[in-house]
Image 1 (cartoon, rainbow, N blue to C red):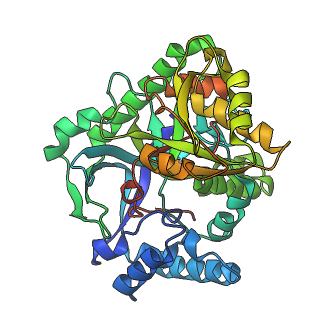
Image 2 (image 1 turned 180 degrees about the vertical axis):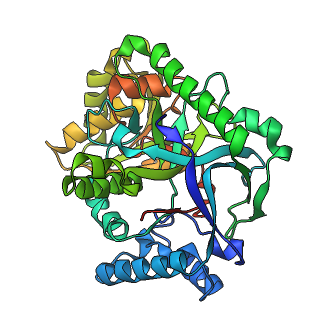
Length: 411
């Protein structure tokens, strides 16, 4: 069986889908007012808000809240809330705020093919370094959960556009499952059922994609077939919980665990609606000019991508030597991490070059404007450089992240 495959998908029936569907738990972490508005709007209506734990609300009662979430999941699963679609995919069209349509495919991945540890050569890779302390809060919810509710966006590098794009041409022949406006400026989402002959044909295309991708990157040994674009830490928690269960069972029983699989939405990195926006670096230190001099000496070269910099008194740019890594963000972050072990250094991550320029005008600040990650070279860079550093890129704005909607039973 392919790493990415059809799943037994659950969708709520007889509920308000705009209230059911809320944004990923790791968004608006510094804006509790966002989650207050959502809670006021949802009230006691059936909603994924009651089945997830927003990071903005993490606190001393997390254990009790995780237990309450597990109970509500059980009530929803056993109480007839869901309609079941076995051995199916969901073809998704998400109309974003800018009018572009991001196309995706909901299915499941085999967690045996995924390893989020640094230096991993697994077919499914994390796209950024996992922050260990961000995993346990998610594990508390996942460990006793009977439902898998995904906000993971999984990237594939389908250069031939053979997986998702054919479904766009067939969309009118696929049964409509939902079509509604997401709350809080999330845009519109439409989902169509892929099953039977269409699902079988899609499974063949997925198998071909996985074979062809291995062959295309054969020169680098162990290529990534899929990469986690959003939801790295939630998928890491799913993997960690599966490994916990697996250790307690004989191999044949472990292989049959529902927790071996995780529901995700697959998107093609080549999709024009997917924008990789750079996240710039802002370093505060006693002598930003000296830090800049060290950076240019360590990373600069005659050729390579240009990296702009700003301080309170001047600005400029230098070429980043190609041998420093396939992606500029990896070289710059690695340098700053090394320096932070030697001298006092506070690092911030800034969206937008205008904001970076403004903040760099402060005394003691050095702003480094990074070029956007090249989508076409992303998978090769991931294989060559390993997992990217934290905050390597952003896949669009916060409102464009995945909303919880489909589910899958974990027992």
